[in-house]
Image 1 (tube, rainbow, N blue to C red):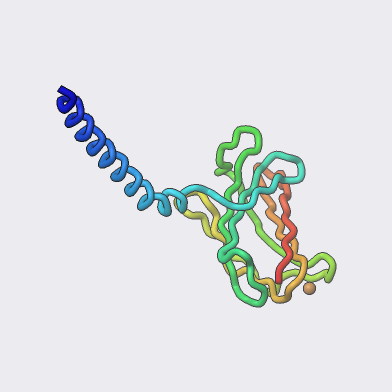
Image 2 (image 1 turned 90 degrees about the vertical axis):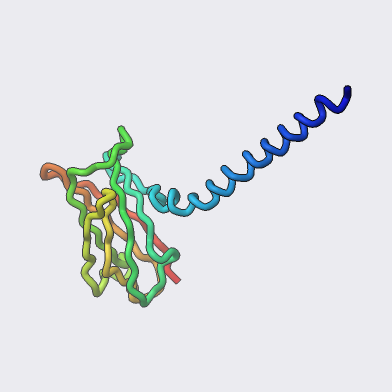
Length: 150
Ligand SMILES: [Cu+2]
């Protein structure tokens, strides 16, 4: 009499364990692609608080003396919606040395809405400032980030 409930219980446990293994394998496999689609980066607020800029250097950390690129997302700081109707200008320099970069950044808009900035080069180690100028309807607002580059 004690056997009757034991067998279905063992079977139930077996099925449960199968059910547990399969989804966890699936989620492990799909995790990198899901992660790649999510905007992840360093967040800075523009100076008047209208926009939130998220940027991800590629590679991270940024090497000095080597070309690198960045992915940039611009959001409305209040609604957290992507700001699509803006013009973005990205530049960088070393304020303490009073010089900029020797290369001109090239911006392209990705299908995802992210902006890809290429042809960036920090030609010496030290403290660099990246500026993000966001223009909408003739009004420009700046966000900036200070980066220590080895
Ligand atoms: Cu310098």
